[in-house]
Amino acid sequence: MGGDIPADTKLPDDVLEKRLREAINASQNKATFSSLDLGSLQKWPMATAGELDTRARPLVRAMQRGSIDEAQRLLFSSGNRVLDAGATPGASPSANPFIGLREVVAAIGGLLDDGGTWCVVQSEDESSSIGIRVVSVLEIHEDTPVIVVLYRPFNRSSAKDCAQWISEQSKSNAPALGNGFIHIKRPSIEVKLLLLYLKLNASLVPADFPVDKKPNEARFKPSVLLPVAPLDFDALAKIAHNLGCSVCGKKGASRCAQCQTVWYCGAECQRADWPDHKQSCKSLKGGRWVPITFQEQLPLPSIPGVDPKQTKYMSNINKFSSDFSGRSTATRKFEAADPPPPNVWGDRVFMIKLQVALSYGEPGHMMLYDRKRSFQGFMLRKDNPAFAELYAEMLGPRGGFGGMKMYRWAKRTGDWELSVCLDRQPQTDTKW
Image (cartoon, rainbow, N blue to C red; front, side, top):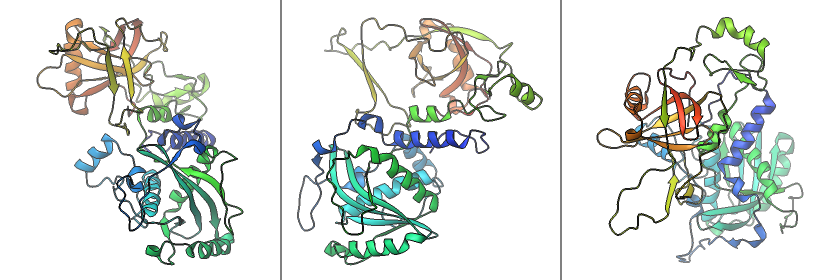
C-alpha cells in the first residue's frame, strides 16, 4: 500500500492489523463519510441499454482514483503496474494486492455499466470466494458514487450454497450478459483484502436501510463499495510512524538519542541492541547546526488589476494526492497576521523535509514541514544567511532526490525559528 513497514518488523500482529484497517479506511477517505446518510442520497445516473442519456456517468471511471506518483511511475517505468483505466472482470492479477483491490472495485463498476448486478470474486486456487449483489447505486457528489451491496463469503464447505445462489442470480441477468457466470478470479490475498474492505464498510449501512434479500441470501450482509485511492501523504505518515521497539516490537517509547532513527521500548532493549546498532549509529553530536527563520506564506507577486490587500488562499497538492477537485486538498485562507504554528515537539529533535520548486536558476525559497504537518512554511533566501549552504547540501551527495528535496533533523527554537542539523543525513527511509 506504500507504507514503509519493513518486512522484518517486530510489530505485533494486532498492531499491524489495526494499521491495515486504518489504511483501508483512509484509502476511501472515509473520515469525510462518517455521518453518511444513504437514505438522503440521490441515485447515480446510470446508462440504460439502448438509450442515449447524456446525464449518465460511467461507474468504471468514477470508482477509480489515481495520483501524480502513479502517473509518474506509469510514464517512466514500464515495470511498475498501476491501475488500468479500463479494469475489467478477469483482468490479469496485480503483483500488489492493494492495487488488485482497486482493480476489482473498478471492475464491479464496469460490470454495472454493462447491465450486470452481481458477481462472484473467487480465489485462483478456488478455496474461497465472495458473492456480491448490487442493491443500489447512489451519488455522494458528482464524481463519487457509493454502491450498496449484499455480500457473503464462501469456502469449500459452503460451495453448494454458492452454486445455488449463482443459479438463482443467472436467471435475472441482463440480456446482453446471457445466463453466464459473472466471475472475477484473483489471488487469495486479494480476496481476503476485499472481504476486509466489505466488513469495514458495513458500518456505513444503517440498520433501517431498505435491503430486499432474495432467495438464498439469508446469510448475506449489507455493505458499500466506495472508490479506493492510493494512500495520501497523511495516511502514509501514520502507517510508518513509530514502528515499535527494534528489539521486541512493543510500542516505542523513545528513539536512540544519538541518531534519532531507532525506536526502543526502554533502556533494557536499548542496551541489548547497542552492540549491533553502534555499527550503523551516526551521532548528531558534532553536527553543524544552522539557524533558519520561516514564514507561513509566500509574498505574492504584484498582479495588475488585483488588489494586494485581497484575501489569499493556498492549496497543497503533493504526488500522493488522489483528489484534484479541491474537496480533499487542504485549502486555507491566510489572514494578515497568522498566529505561529503550535510546537508539538517541545525541545525534542524531529525530522523536517525541505524542498524547492521546479524553476530556472537559483531558487528564492524552500518549503519545509514536519512529518505530522504540525507546521508548514517557507524559508526565504533573502532572510536566511544559511540558505545557500542548505541548498548546496540539497544538491550534494547527502541530499539526493535530484537536488529537489532533502530531509534533516531540526529543533524548534522559536515561534518562527528552527535549528537545522546541516551535515547529518537521516538514515531512515522516508516517504513524505
